[in-house]
Length: 201
Image 1 (cartoon, rainbow, N blue to C red):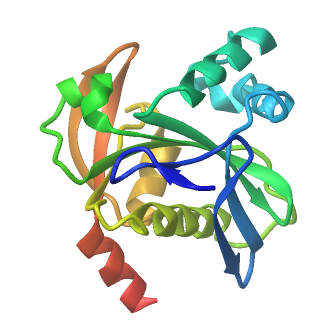
Image 2 (cartoon, rainbow, N blue to C red; image 1 turned 120 degrees about the vertical axis):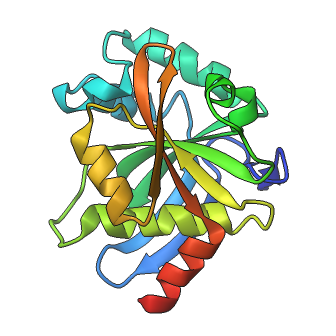
């Protein structure tokens, strides 16, 4: 059964599908609570790939990574999910309450804020606009919680692709902030901006 650990953050038992959507191009997209045991091989391959250097977990062993996500699984303020496209794992998603994270000390967190990190893994059959379409499903999942008013991200300032993706997905860039181990580029997507964008598509 899906549970809400705060009025903004959704979670549940490991492996539970908490959101599903049918995209006309991508197919069936399912967001499931990460299982730190059965999903470990997939996420370890992703985080140790050279393209995942900004994720910051590339030096962890398989066991260390598993232990980390077992710990995350026990938190009420941070959650991890595996997103699948027609059964194929494609994205590692993390959600968190910014006020319970180092980010909360770097900006003025609001009551309806939810922070996210997401790592693109595999893609499946190539399609135009893959990342934008996946981001659309993720935002639909997050804003399905009525208490969520704003999505907050903080990609590394040197991660030009992530910053460009944020703009393409409708985020407004904020200030740069200093976080443990990196300089981050704050960006925000409000519920109003999200709904306006949906109305135009």
